[in-house]
Length: 203
Image (cartoon, rainbow, N blue to C red; front, side):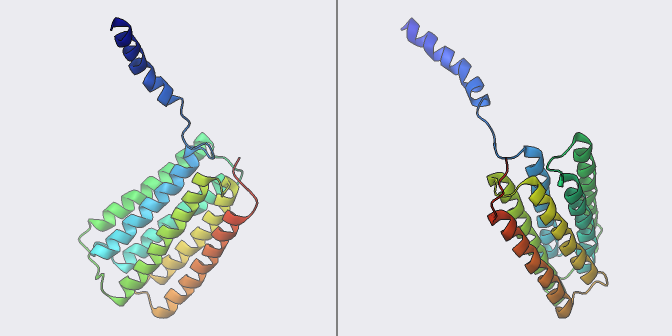
């Protein structure tokens, strides 16, 4: 009886250490995934703000300009396949600023009409940003995207974000403007697909 109790106690003490030895995601450092996951979260916040009327099309466009800067920074920082501590701090600062700008726009008392044609177009474009960034994050998690490849597709995503910001600059996204954004989004989608299905894998 005593032996059984001692063995149980020993197992209970050792269990946390055994769990701690289990590797997290072995294919890529968490820092690369974390920065792209935050892109997903920021884009989803913009989408939610458009849907609930807290953001106007113009505000969403200004926020997409922030996101373009973040994506461009990611492209520059990850192009050598790694993120240094200084680069991580720089990226965190840019993403923190984007997050603060989203919060300010959501709470400034200026409301949009989520049922307007302009907002509906912007919502569709921003939702696609969410989806594209999720594909990049998934590629990093599974190893089908290297960090260098992620850098290149983030450069493409920066171009998409700038196109959306330009389309919404006057507060109205026209059908023709959305078509131009969609062409950029289609090119970005193809770019992600090529990067994820080539022979390169994260090491």
